[in-house]
Length: 185
Ligand SMILES: Nc1nc2c(ncn2[C@@H]2O[C@H](COP(=O)(O)OP(=O)(O)OP(=O)(O)O)[C@@H](O)[C@H]2O)c(=O)[nH]1
Ligand SMILES: [Mg+2]
Image (tube, rainbow, N blue to C red; front, side, top):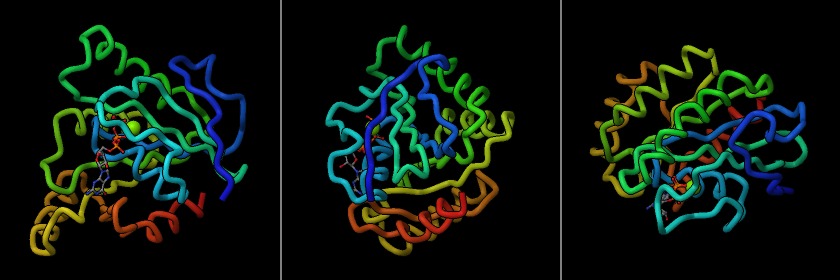
């Protein structure tokens, strides 16, 4: 798989000029977005995995096999991000969801261990409002027992009112299932 970083952007005029279908990855800070992207494309250090959560406050675009553009959206909800940077997050994400005509799917990533947060629900509302198709993925499932996992998946499916793919960037669980969906785009 040939994957290349294209550029970072915060505003629409900076997005890469391309008509390839875009697949965005969204979720709260530290949820494992970059790890999931790296695991999907089989590259260890493509999207930066941060020891300092919340650092990725720009939109990162990657060319995947000249067939899709993967978009690593900045994480939300990290308390230590300065308020003035946090204030920019909403308009930046909303502009992207609203304005990018080649956005075909958003992968909405939640932590399998936790109740979805208020910000996850805001994100869900935006995806619905701007009519962006979305697939919910619950990651870090390797940290749960199978009983815990079932309870957690049921809860997440209820909240988002749709099917959720269990995922682990550590074991690769869910990778095939998610690719099956991405390959239809
Ligand atoms: N056990 C386990 N750890 C994971 C998994 N995915 C991510 N992690 C860990 O979770 C931490 C955050 O992962 P990142 O991929 O940097 O998360 P992110 O959502 O991109 O974070 P920001 O870009 O900083 O918002 C890292 O320490 C990862 O190693 C997983 O599936 N299983
Ligand atoms: Mg990241």
